Each structure stands twice: as C-alpha cells, then as structure tokens.
Image (cartoon, rainbow, N blue to C red):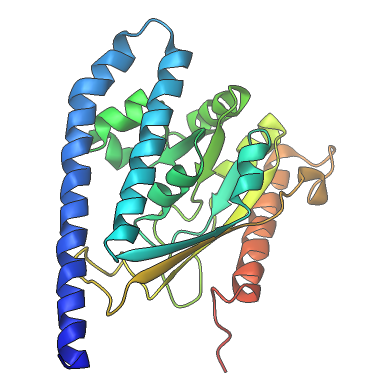
Length: 268
C-alpha cells in the first residue's frame, strides 16, 4: 500500500478508537453516577468513601490512558510526577491545552482532588463522579478556597487549571484566576507548577473529538520544583495583595518554563 493509503487507514483507526474511548467514558460515567454515588453518599464514613472513590477514578483513568496508548491514539511522557506522589499534599497549578489534561493528571496522581467547573455538576456523565469524589466547584470563590483547604488538610493534592478553560493556543495562556493563590496562602502548602503539552494539538478549545490529528498525539507532562510562598510575599503582605502577586508570579513562571521546555515556541 502507498504511504497515503496507510495514513488514511491509521487515521480512520484512531478515529474509531477515540470514539470508542469517549463512548466508554460516557457509559462508565453514567454507571458510576448510578451505582457508586449512592454507595458513597450512604457510606457513614465520608473520609473512607472518598479514598475508595479517588482510587476507583485513578485506576479507571489509568486504564483508559493505557488503552489509548495501546490503540495508537496517543503517547505519554511524564517527568517529575514521582516527586509529587512521594511528598505531602500540594497545589498543582497547570496550563490547560487539551480536554484530556485532567484525565491524564488523575491517572498519574492517585490521591488527588480537582477544582471543577460548576456546569459539570449538572452533566449526566459527571454529576455523580464530582459529588462522590468530593471535588470542589468553582461556583463560589470563597467556598472554593475553604473546600480546597479542607481537601489539602485531609492529605489530597489539589489539581487546578487557573485559566478556567482550555488555553487559547498560539503559545499564550488566559490570565490566571487567584483562587489557587488564596488557597495556598490559607493552607500554607507549596504550589507545584505542572507543564502540559500536546503535539500535534488534539482536543483543544477549537477542535471537536473527531478532529483526529494526522499521527498519534504525544502528551508531555513536566512537574517542576515546588514554589514556596515566601518567595513571592512576606507574612506582612496583605492577603489580597499577596494573592495577586502569587497568581501573577506563578503565571510568569509557568509561561517562562513552557518556552524553556520547548512546549511553547519562540517566533521570529
């Protein structure tokens, strides 16, 4: 067969595999909401039920990522993640280029909690998952900070995409919201910047699930060294001003490293 025919066959196969994976995810999400959520809600010990649910989510996404790799849809490179799992809870602050970012991070980090868009709390595929896992809604900024601090105190690593939506592309980020900075200042834990790249682009803000790239996409995850809060603000700095400084500094730090790691390209 000619290379062009082989390329078409490969792309068709990846399209079918991607569709099957999304279908499986949707079905499993509904079953999870119907079967696991009532169990988690009725279980008398919320802390232990959350641990069980977090483990189920972690291993499900781990299996889904493994299947996507086995089917030739994607490849995955991750560095620095072992250090996250080896240490205590932290706040992961990441850029958000693709729809799959949270799935991959939850597959890599077994004891994690997420800040989730409020719209997903009514989604038939997500409503049971986010409630049973005790994820944090972004509907109320004050409650977001308080709930996140409680999860950190319980030993969970918080995963936050402070852009609030997928990155716009073009080697730039949306302005970071300050919720993660308030959370870090309140809880006193470190901020762990995480860089995410997808090459070629897939599942971006402007792409539908069926816009399959011409070759398997490679997702790269790079966890940087944690950032201590005293690097940006002193104890005497007013809380609101400190949160503003921390949010801006972390965005600059992540942007600079996206260029250093080659995830963003310097244009001439």
